[in-house]
Length: 439
Image (cartoon, rainbow, N blue to C red):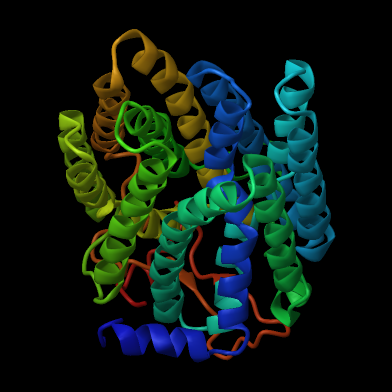
């Protein structure tokens, strides 16, 4: 198997529709990826406290967490265009309402972020559901997951800088409006594409739990709740650090960008080669390294050194996310792929909301290092969950089986092909491909 280096990434991007879908999804996710930062800056500009800023960002994240799996299941049932674009439009209107009402009326402000979060379109899960029909071969799909994680970190690198630039050029309210208008255009680009219009989910077994009936998926979601908690706490702790005589908004944007840059570099390196063995075991190693990377942030040195530490703290984030995509794909029940990926976004968002809510009081009561201590605790807890649930989160295939439990239609074209489950989790026939160790 060849390395998935720059040539491998170029092979993915040369596939029909792939670049458009990747870029469109990246742009469409901009409001969700930077919304919490924009909300914090907007609230502080309005004279609100760290606690209020953290609370609004937390409510936005929680609303997103509630809406993602609901909208993801709707996508699996009704297709992408009929769900994604209307949701993106309503979400943008919610942020526009926040910019209009400000924080003078707290009920209206909280209502606005709830609407914006609830209707955030599940573009992440939608893209991962589209990759098999666009790329065909399973090895290309797995490589696309790594590229997807890298692209996500581009957003987390450029997004904070874009928000702070918009704040500097105009105002925090203008930043809210612009990033959501751009996000709406990204969603439109995706849903107007041929693969998005043609995609249909696999037939699914009717079950009220949907994707959540998979125990392995539940274990993964519990771990990524704490990864989200760590990142959410850094959002508030970094703002407090920047405003504590360390350069203000410019330093804050630089720290957030450095965190994303570190993850981008880590993702590029991780995706530049194939990996042997089960992704479940690899994920535990990556989670441990991610947790260790947060510890030096407790030192809170000068801005330049802090930016360097932030970059180091982000290195293992994209690899962990890319590996988690594989685990979701292996454990999601048939016909629930968009919903399953949306649940990953949800638990991550809930964790981030809890982290922002916890870091605000921690900073105000104890000091800036306490905010980063929340991140360290979150990383350690994520690793603990993966270790404790090792048996539940075991590879779905028997020993000696190939890492892949889905087979893609080799010649699946963008107009109608889609992923076909090769072996159902927990029901692999003894003589089937997985049992024989075939890919």
